[in-house]
Length: 418
Ligand code: LLP
Image (cartoon, rainbow, N blue to C red):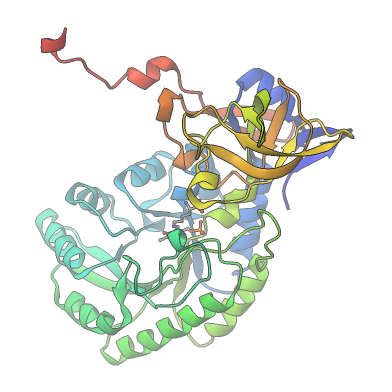
């Protein structure tokens, strides 16, 4: 369910025609629907209302402060993977006791920052990291609450780049080694073992891999109890998929039913780290057609958004639905929708049937709310797009379009070259 619909042949976000936004904010531009974000968060969070739980939205999916602020105001926490994400979360007012910190490469500076903020829990990904966190906690006179991210070795059946819970992946601690690592953690100074964590991958379209992982984690939790280690938090990560094209992922309530069934008799707070399922279909990338071009082999639609704005099609071969902002009867043609970047890999769609479009008109690239802006770059010295949040019949620029000045602001020409 999302709030991007046509009314009288014009695409609206909630009660605002997206053309109005294009005229004010320019293109390319990300547009998010507040009502959709709100709805997705409350549906997901509400699906677990019968469990003690915390929904820690995964900041990497969309890290705009306004969006973090919204989820915080709805009682959400966040899952972070860097000092920068912690900084954002704190700027947005997310309380530290609702912040969990994952990632295989936490630096000393980042660990110190998280310890000084007294976050809820570190999700530890290796034995060296465990030792490092203990050392820093001792040095700073803090205590580190930790969970081990275990790698349950289940196949989430998604794109290999976004699979994380298989033995060949770099994430987490292998199941076989987990007990030993927990024993070690329990001995370490300034460390409180409080949980068990896993995250098996992203854009999952079936419940079964989640259930398989959870069963393995439960077995581990039982073993930990035998060692006298109580699991206060069970973090199940994120990963629930969305519909980009024809996928039929389980609805959050279906996912919740399966999880709740598996959790019978377990006495702990369950943490979820959803990203895409909350923001993915709550955002679009609005772009303008610059030119159309026919070559002997192909028909191209050249637009003002490129792989630097939305890299998912180039990087994963991902599908994003593309539709004209003005819907009218016109013939269809098969085109490649490409950006202005000087690479043949710069495309938003390939061999796509699209209504015949004209230079100057706007196209909406759908389902771009997750891993869109957050993966954007300045490649080809292209300023990053503006981000806009629609709220009913008003819209708000929540990130200014970058300027050419912004591009060079941090650069310095050394004296010997002046
Ligand atoms: N928790 C952890 C530890 C994660 O690594 C991730 C995503 C999440 C939660 C959130 O997963 P979600 O609910 O959004 O599936 N750039 C890729 C997706 C990479 C996901 C990385 N980890 C894409 O555009 O498809």
